[in-house]
Length: 339
Image 1 (cartoon, helix red, strand yellow):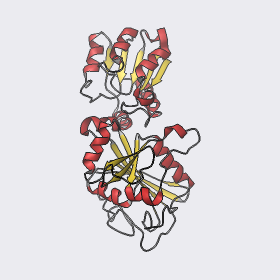
Image 2: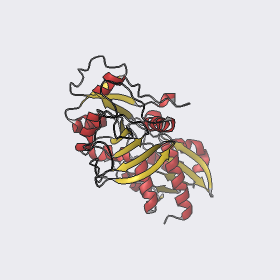
Image 3: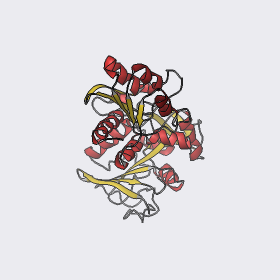
Image 4: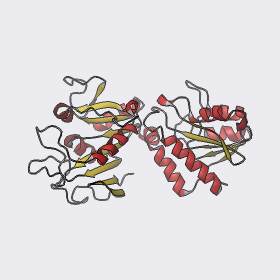
């Protein structure tokens, strides 16, 4: 059985793993905490590029204190040989007494086998977090789960809307819509995603950098992609960018999954945003509503213009996960019915 104290340590391991979201593809960002006699003796997170794993980092941190200890890990330990050995073997060799797992790994190479291997070695395994914590764990690993289930990354669409519901004006390049706090949130989103993409018109008209420009996070920029109907035949593709075929978005997302991408942030423009929404390929939507008025001729990805309600924008049935102000701007974080 999992106690209230177990819940606290598990919550801490989830928060720890979240610190490396966007940096561990193709592997999930796993947090691991090792506790002995109520004291944390070791902790670890999956490293940049997916290695080393959180469990082995925590065991290294704990050293001999791991023997007889309880391990809290946000995702079921791996049980297969790849570039490194199985975390299950490392835990067994370290002599831990108990492992509390936040979420089973649906990777077919694990999928319950990790927990069973630990049990077979005489280690107590618990798998029963509270519903609230189970949801939090699934949310932390949603990109990995999506890639294992559907072969594609979890897709977040971020749109900055003017007061009259537009996201831009044709042939005007980048038009300021939101303020400093909203822009900082956007850069934070970039840092937590494996990949970022825009449509080809956005690249040609705005020449966006799509990098993370927050102090201390210069190295956290995601891999950059452009959706284009010509596939790789994109004129003057910026250095370091890759092209995706927009004619079949589902296939393009599968290609990203094949590259190991577990999360994708799409920042527009209107054409690609509308296509993703109509294809039900958006898993989370960030709407940032600014004070600017773009006026007649503004482009929008929504069927109704100006934007006056979620239902009027074709978002009927979407759930509001969060609504708050960011200075003079308003943020809606929305989840579609299919999630």
